[in-house]
Image (cartoon, rainbow, N blue to C red; front, side, top):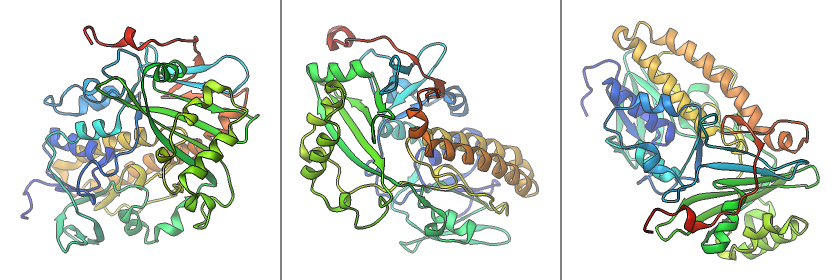
Length: 412
């Protein structure tokens, strides 16, 4: 493929939330780019719902006016007329939470719908698994496992936790950089409807968590999306500290789904029945196979050659415990797009200095985020510590009794 004569021509490896956000920003700015993803489609690995808060206005303003409305495209509660809300149980005192209000604006988006929204009018080159990166004096070239390659002026690694671009930049394998988190987890998925779904929505419209010093574990329950028949697709996990969690022979890697579910039900026997109901409503086939091993990393420095940089989990991989990884990834993309716009008319003269400043900011912000995420469960167990979610301090929440018919569209 011949290169665009506009400088710089940007190569984006990874079409997740961060990569697509950057692509949309560059599309509006008129900056030449190509974006690649190793998967053959956008559906294979899309993840669960994501909370959005402080960057919503910046995100909308950075994109072209031909984008469809965000909330109407991806709000996980639609078509129900409920506001996004997360609640926290288990600590002394009242239930606390965060809800979308004028004072605490936030959204909870179905990740697949959000990713499809981000992909609007973006030509993605799928099935492109990165093999290696080659930097030259006048260009950077990415080589893919299918034998193809592409060249440009600037490469952006948006290729996730196990980033090949990170390995190139640091000159070290990911196995030496990533820090395994000593938490064992069991994940489950189930679809609920009627009164069972109403009880879950009453505990938290979007999600709820249980964390206490009285328990040796923590749980999280989230609504991924509402279906056309007003049933809800839920996911949940229970986790606990385990020094052997990253061992390949950990029992959860090989246990049957029934054995895992039995373990969850036995572990949560002392939990309030309302807070453990979803576990008993999950069939054994709803238990996720294997066990994900979460890893994070604090990267102290990055080389600034002016040719390669990173965004998202590639540069600050973190646990999902605080729900901030996606937010930081999108913030990275927004910030980097401004950097690229600032030096596009002076390329390549200003690129190295501009990327040095960008790296300083992203590494410091990433360090704080990784640390907060790593210690989120411990913090939430402390009775005197503030619980922070979706960019706001959780406040006492009134008890609700949700009736689905009251929140359906008129005529439904």
